[in-house]
Structure formats: structure tokens, C-alpha cells
Length: 425
Ligand code: IMP
Image (cartoon, rainbow, N blue to C red; front, side, top):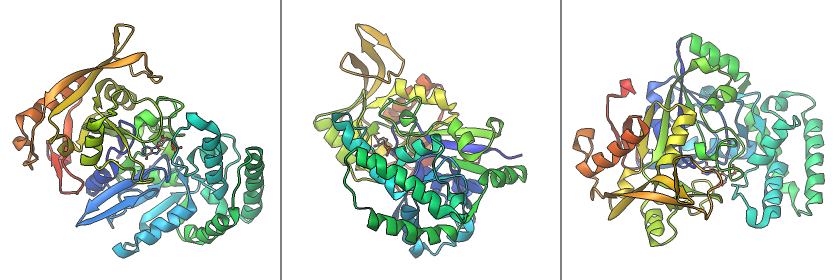
């Protein structure tokens, strides 16, 4: 029987998962999303084109692959409709290759309004949410009042929608939040016909049957491990389990069916939104990294906070996910910096610690190790990488005990260097 390999971001999201899923997709029969929703922005570049996906799995550009939106995802029908329309120029037969879980929760227009109301009410303690309605939708899932994609096929859908909407409006009124619902509600109902044109099924059966028949599955994580609702820097996190066990609950496959876990990280760190960021560079160096790495959000366009690679945080993510192989992204961005650093430990009250502190604050500091820059990106094979870059990567491998098998040196599919043949990944 085949297994589900899982691909995850090990930092605060935006590691480059979309590019790598698209790159690895030829090795798999199925690509499946298992958590998150339109807060994600997975950027793919190929044949001189750039495309950002929010809810649709990143295997969609491979016409012979099946793409599944699992039950753990929260889906916004309006954004989904727009995403489908944006794919029109590619002439893909999406309605036959994309399958949606009947159990995926649906983001309603009022969920988006609630997200705004909750954030505004938090004042200086804002999470920096993408305001896509993610938190309120997962909240309703747990409160057992949410609507799921399968519900749009039922006769009583409109009355159930109405009931939930009224519940939301009374909360919005309590918050004194002003809104104009009519336009976004019209968009929502207009988008439901598009949604109904897709296969909405119990994807847990489909996936398990595909595995039994020998088909291989790649589960595509969204956000990053340090935004996990349990293990991230709570409360500055997203509302789902972004770590590998989330693939089991978000797809309906048992732990024994999980195969390899690929962990993606940037050669440095970025974060959007609020919350602790131990290695953050606040001055010119941070600005330089942001400009060189074009670090602006794919979903919101917000400038990303930038900092050095955080080794204890990386090790924490590797531990939580059971990562078997590492893929390092944006190595090219560091090549032009004069001095590169890695955080090797944290310090508080004179004591060193290797444990990722979810409540990192002014009492803590970082211990940094310097590395010389490699100065250029003139390499396309693993055997050609400059010795300074080798030293940088060896240091990470030695400290994590996990091999780095893929190096990304640019956004395009072709700007990817493998340590070993693709088949052994
Ligand atoms: P939410 O998931 O939109 O509620 O946002 C919660 C936090 O996670 C905020 O700090 C967001 O900026 C961050 N976040 C959510 N999705 C992503 C993502 O795909 N990439 C990076 N950060 C994200």
C-alpha cells in the first residue's frame, strides 16, 4: 500500500511550499491540502509565469494529478470562485482533477466580518490576522455550529445559513461593529453554483481507496509549524494544527499511512503579523533582507518581518513533525549579504537554553554564530556549491541531524538543486 508523504513549512509560513509541491508533484498521483484556507498564498513560477494559489492544492498545474481539498481545510466559496476563474488561461480541466471534501468547513461572509471585529477589539494585542475569516470559522467548527461544503447540497441549506448568520450578526452588534453585508452576501450566493459544479465527496474514503490501489499522495501543509495552534507562539498563531499530525485529522488517514515528512525552511526567517520573533532584524539589515528576498505577503501584500535563521526553533519544528528530509529555500538571497548569522541558542538571566520559548520577550536574547557569505549564485549542481555555502548547510545538518536534500536558489521551478536523484527523495 502507498503512503502519504507530508510537506510542511518549519517556520512562520511563506517558506516556499507552493514551489516545492509543484516541483515534486510529478512524483505523485495526488496532492492534498489538509488545513488552513485562504490565509495561505502559495506562489508558483514556471514558463515565465507567476501564479498564487490560496485554497487549491499546488499540484493543479499538472493535468494528470488529482488535487484534493481535505476536511481539515476551511474554504471560502468566493475566493475559491475567483481562484478558479484566474486559472482559466491555463486551459486545465479542473472540474475533473479537483475534488473537495464534503466535511471541509465553509467560510461565510460573516466569518470575515467577525475576524475584523475581533481583531479591532484586541487593540495593541492584535494577532495580525490575514482577516480571511479563518479563526471564526474554526471557532464555529469546534463549537459544532459551522456549515460544511456538503451542506450546500442539502435542501435546508438556506435556513441553516440564516441561523448561523443571525448568530454572527448578534455578536457583531455586541461588538458595535459596522458592516455592509449585502454586497458580500450576494457574492457568496453567486459563488455557490461554481462550488456545486465540483465533486464534493467524503474524501477520506477516496484517499484511503487510492492508497490501497497503490496511488501516492503528497499532503501540502499551509502556514508553518511555528504558527501551529498548540505549539506555535500562542496566541500569535493561526487556528489549525499546521504540523504533520494535522495531515491525519485533516485528510482522514491514520498515522501508520504517513510516509516521509519533508520540512521546508528559508535560509533565514520571516514572519508576518504580530508575535515573538527572536532573531528579528529591525534596522537596515532587516530592510536589506526584505528587499533582496522580496519579502512581501503573497496574500495580503504586507511587508514581512525578517531575521536570521533560528536553529533551536528549526530543531523544535523538526521534532514536532518528525522531519526526515530538509529542503532549504531562498539560499540565493543570502549570497549578497556581507555577514550571515545563525541563532544557536537563547539566553535568559545568564542561562542558555535550546528550548523554543513560545513567550519570547525582552528578558531573552539570542546567541548568534557568524558565517562568511558565498558571494554568488553561479551554481546549478550540488557538486558546484561554494565551500562557504557548504559550511553553512553542513552546520545546519550537523546540528539538526537531518539531511538537506534540496536547495532552492530562485522562485522558478528550474532554480532547484537536488542533492540526490529525485527518485530517492
Ligand atoms: P490567520 O490565520 O489569518 O488568523 O492569521 C493568524 C496569524 O498567522 C497572523 O500572524 C498571520 O499573519 C499568520 N498567517 C496566517 N496564514 C499565513 C500564511 O500562509 N503565511 C504566513 N503567515 C500566515
